[in-house]
Length: 406
Image 1: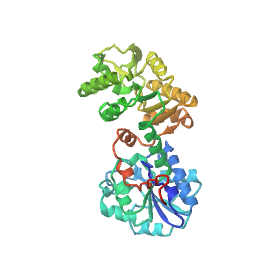
Image 2 (image 1 turned 30 degrees about the vertical axis):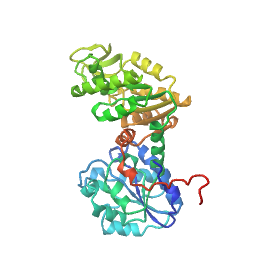
Image 3 (image 1 turned 120 degrees about the horizontal axis):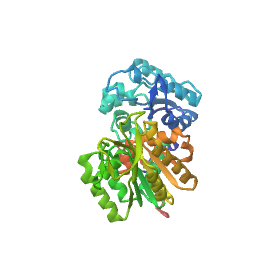
Image 4 (image 1 turned 60 degrees about the horizontal axis):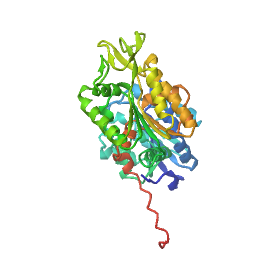
């Protein structure tokens, strides 16, 4: 995955189209989590300092090809303006005479943000004409949106076929950190995989079981594995059609000598809502009308003991119903424990919205090795799948063998 980056191109005076991932949560017209915006700042500031004319482009939400005022990028531009301390104007549309004119008027060291690309259905269809219109704005293309690199869209693949295409600093960092995980990570190597469903993470589980020494399972996903072990889980979220696959993963882990940690005690609740009655039970036989909503203290102790000497960790997905504060304790406790492991010299890479939120909410982000902005892209990369938005970027030329004529 050795790609040319923005360090390898002279952008002085050139118009540079930068695909960023500003798909951030909004509430009351304000950005509630700016981590993806912050992650793009080093690339933006480097290009501006080099005298580039920067055209930023992103999607926000799923407007399905229609203009939705609640998904306009103005709140994002306001937050970016605060972060880089220079005005970031937003165009009225990603296309049009007014937008083309605003791009032409950019001077070296200035930038502009195009309105939500997904207001055009042609973006997700990777429509060649739409890609041509975007490419007409620039001389150079930069992809710094790792979170959308698994999508073959006009702004991630179509435009990159038409312009010299480079990786931004965030893209470079994501590829380096995730490549280390599937290459030669310091051992012992552990993966913590949570979230709701086995089905969405089955391929990455198959990959990880062949690479890790310890596999920790939590969240709704763990319930399917408890079923596979013949345990009763009451009304808990689970995928009954994935029980055989869960058994297969467990059998593979045993065959390869991978230690699998599943809940031994759990928090159960009458309803999966705030303010409901809840209690701790052994994870053997949950009453028929109760829901598993978090891990218990004994499970947390077991997980921490299994992770006490690991040197590399990949964490994706919460260990309980994280969006309800009463059931977020397990996820938050693991976040604190992993921050301590980092302080002790371990490499910890985290991906997935709720895992990242558990870190951000507790002010722990600066203590982690790498917090991936990727989500689905991170998982597909770890599965060994080619990401179209990465594959299309320019490869770094292979170094000549030592002693070869120059």
